[in-house]
Length: 362
Image (cartoon, rainbow, N blue to C red; front, side, top):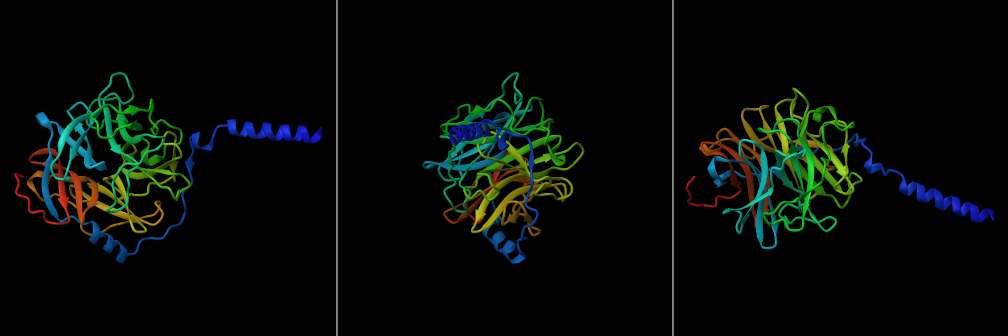
């Protein structure tokens, strides 16, 4: 009888434990690894030689009727290349996609995140692909989770250009090539009004990049990098982690990329051999806006590149800003997509690692 009673109590305890609120659903900041190895100068130079794109191909996508384009993210699906990008019409951000057979010539298909009345993200919905194969020179295809394709997006309710406050939302689809509305989660997954918000992101959150790390380097399969800012402070890049793409925990109390002033933002993660590489843009801590990178062995401790920019203003079409990178390597050529601001407005441009000798109107 005692054994039966003890067994019943054990079962009750296990059931109660399973019903308890999982740790991943509580709003806490996870402690980050306190120590990590810096990437040495020789390795940083070796990475730079592999990713540099000194040849500017020119403008590859322009908005219709004067609309501004921003934030390209490029992926492969089947035999096609797709680009997710942002449209700004003066009221706010919507997200669209385009397709290409060769990474050079792009055909706009339509919107996938549109304005919607009465929602927390009614006037701002700027999407960025998630769970891409991040292997340098890899497939660049999107991975699935729970049978779906995913994106994260910058969302907000107010009109204007990135009007604060902004937060991070999550959406999914069954087909990432169709110009059809993605399915959005009902509330932001990271926002400034959550109790665990960190000081460096206490006003707003911007662009995010989510990777699937099957090795669970940080103890979680999904890792998000995103830039945020406090009131009156600079934009810096921080981290969050998740087990289910829905509940996100902030990782570490401090940003992982901090250049002291200006903007450090729009991260994209790739991996070259055993090195994690983060492409990101800087602005105003040096003149204008430009793309650069950092390297890490553990996703937490990053060594910033101090050498030549990957792209910077140099042409009439990008003489104001050359920034917001998305970089892929295909058939031995590095393609560096970026937002260019100059005499053609705000457009999507391309720089490459080889001179493609294309004759085109720039």
